[in-house]
Length: 221
Image (tube, rainbow, N blue to C red):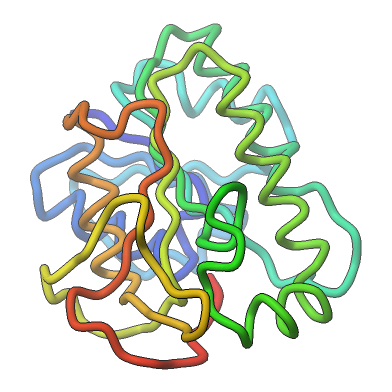
């Protein structure tokens, strides 16, 4: 398949690129800086651009079979709409180009999974440090939900840089009201790639966490 990956140089994004290439997909990596892409492969094409520029986004999406997004940023303490505005461009470009499948990483703690990242995130990290970031994620998800695309919103638990284990719990009852569960970015990427062809979660918001639940503060994208 021809896949375009937005946020391709982030933690989950790099895992998506690497695993997609290993599976034999032709990958277009949409990046802000080419120097941050450390992967080289004959099936990998780099597109340097800004997700807030609709023309660049449309050009990258044209001719693709599916779109994956692991967009993120570190402007946690200021109000921003990078995720939602970028996603709005992606949705509009997919609609115009006739590309249907969109798999996007957001987070537990968004939408009807609010509170599932445990006490630390629910009562301190999100309201104090990550308020604007999660507010933007809420708007990002609404961009999908208001579209007619075949979208899948993947909501991971706290992210780590651990290895791919293949042991993933998935579904609606993921996370904990008390403790912070975790999952490796590599396992999230593997799950997202499986959803490119699988219809079980189309227009749904599955959560994912490690199959061996441990307590952690975790990391962000």
